[in-house]
Figure 1 (cartoon, helix red, strand yellow):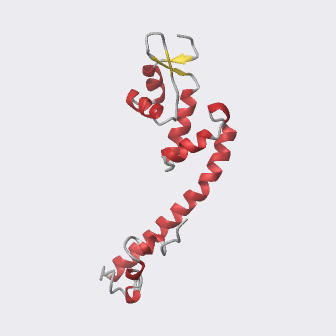
Figure 2 (tube, one colour; figure 1 turned 90 degrees about the vertical axis):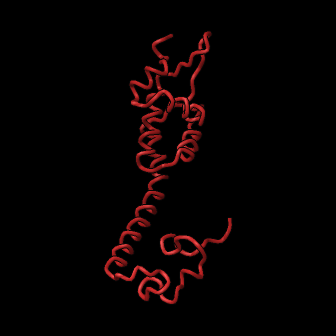
Figure 3 (cartoon, helix red, strand yellow; figure 1 turned 90 degrees about the horizontal axis):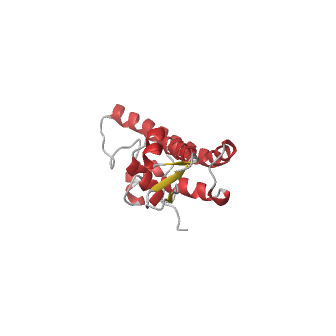
Length: 151
């Protein structure tokens, strides 16, 4: 084993992840490993940076599918750099801002219902006059807005 290769145990210890998480990320195509002659996994040293990138993205709510898509934009599967993070996180910023706006709207609507006391979605004259959201179909229409047209 060269210094540029790490065992799963070494990567797990340095990254704070369990070995099973490494195997999962490998299966999901987020990280790669080579095999020794004895069929043991070895991870390139830069896997640690890649795992840090994945962890940071997950902490702000980015899905693994979106992370995988972002990593696939890097040439030859290279490890993300600070410039890559800046570029990719700019794309995610808009999505996060939309989520924040949705959560703020939900929080504000919840406060309104608590003050009202009726908690009746079909008869609340303030938040659902004439059960207008019932006509839009099932689901959280007040939160997500009217149904969107197909693709």
